[in-house]
Amino acid sequence: HGRHIDADSFGDGLYESGLATVKWIDEIQAKYPDLILENCSSGGMRADYMQLQHYSVQSLTDTWENSRLVQLAAAAPTGVLPEQACVWCLPKTDFTNEEIASTIVNAMFRRIHLSGKTAWLSEEQKAVLCEGINIYKETRHLIDKLVPFYPIGIPSASSDATVHCVGFRNDENCFITVTNMSNDANITIPLDFTPEKVEIIYPTTIPCTVTAGENAVTVSLENLQGVVIKLK
Image (tube, rainbow, N blue to C red):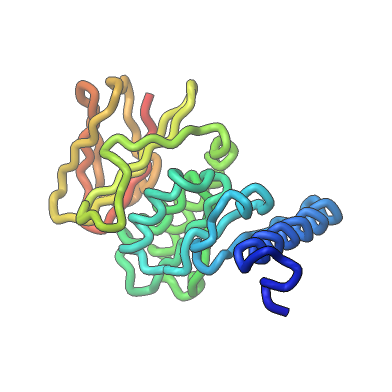
């Protein structure tokens, strides 16, 4: 039957259909409380709060291209809770170590969807990947306790920005993720405080540096490279 059957309009029929769907989801969740249900929603096109409040996790996008995921993952906290936001992490055999690290950085402090032919990676590539997964496991208990913030602004799909930065903090912890898509090796990130200590916690095996300044940090990293920085 069409959505107009037993409804005042097509819109009313679609609304009632949506309510019936999430009611069924709630029944499944009540029956299997440990089951994690993902709202795929056609690559995130239906990431509305009628859906979000009934599902454990939300797929942000169908794309797995790293250069596009950087922007999408950075903007994700504006619409989806970080603990709900699923981000693809898909390292490829032809990726540099820097690109592999950036795929992890994209998903750090969100929900990692690790995929791809990881068994085909070289030992060096696997080491970069495994370090990132281990850092993720060490910090994931904080995800639902951290508040996202944007030191250089929220990225836009129409923007030509080549540096993306997202911060995550609470009273005890502060982290920023920085991904460089430009040829500029030195990037200054403004902050609303002066950090006493800065540390790159991932990656630690790829050359990159960070220095603290007054209300800022300066990061030195290669093109297509991402880092996770802990601030105190």
